[in-house]
Image (cartoon, rainbow, N blue to C red; front, side, top):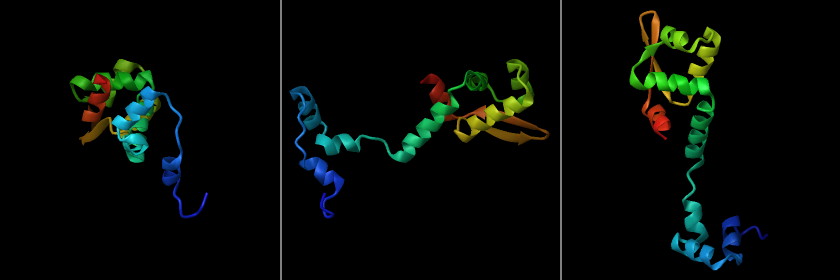
Length: 124
């Protein structure tokens, strides 16, 4: 490929042999460029991927479900789930990094709440 031709220009110059239905749909969305423009940004895809990874565990989904109706302290979440502190801490950390929950210090306790992102995921 010549150095002055970008990969996008080369793709545009390629004659795609596709079924008529696909060609019509491509034209309707603005061709290959229009189709490509519909792909979310890498940043948005990375965020979405992190959310899916965070919710790929039943324990974390249970935590989100518990927090859906009210904020809770670790001791209540631990009691309901019946898991060791270290596992609960790990799961809370994953959810927090994904922006699905927040934790607020209240004296000796941390009170966890679900975020709008967490709610949207549960309602998914």
